[in-house]
Amino acid sequence: MIMIIYCFALIALGTAYKMFLYEYSYAEVKKNNKLRHLVTLMSRNLAEVDTDFGTVSRKQRVADLFCVSMSTTWVCLEGMWICHNGTKKYFSFLKTKQGVFVGFLRAGLIILMATISQYTINPEDVALIGLVLLLAEVLVNVCADYFWTKNFELTGDEDHWPNVTEPATTEQNEQA
Image 1 (cartoon, one colour):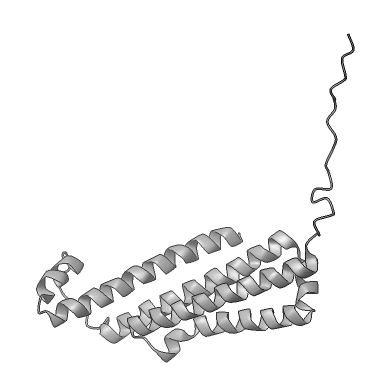
Image 2 (cartoon, rainbow, N blue to C red):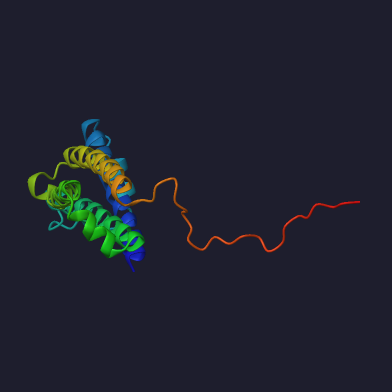
């Protein structure tokens, strides 16, 4: 189930990025007075322009879509990490000092990502803040993997696969 939600969130995230590009290109075209061509491409079959869906409302919806989809993606990644490692290991990791640190950082980044659209709706600002938070999330994941491997993974001496069996047949020395 988490993978399905994750896929939907990634599709929504890609759509939000595409909408950011439309906002950016719309602003550039407007500066160059070539608005007519872009409006024709964007609303070719529309009889009239919807006045309720203005520029501010559109930017707010795009920013909301970006923030919700990105934070949902991160929550799904966290859920998949829990599913792959088990809840017992995950919560015992969160009880360590490093786990508490990583947990607070992840929760803070997810909450901050989900609320960016409350602070700004400018597409460039939202995309830039999203990029910074994404880089911070990557750094937190690297730290989490380092602490996780240090505390919970098997050492090199132990067998990684408990169900390793020996081959059924072995070569015998042929004596002639």
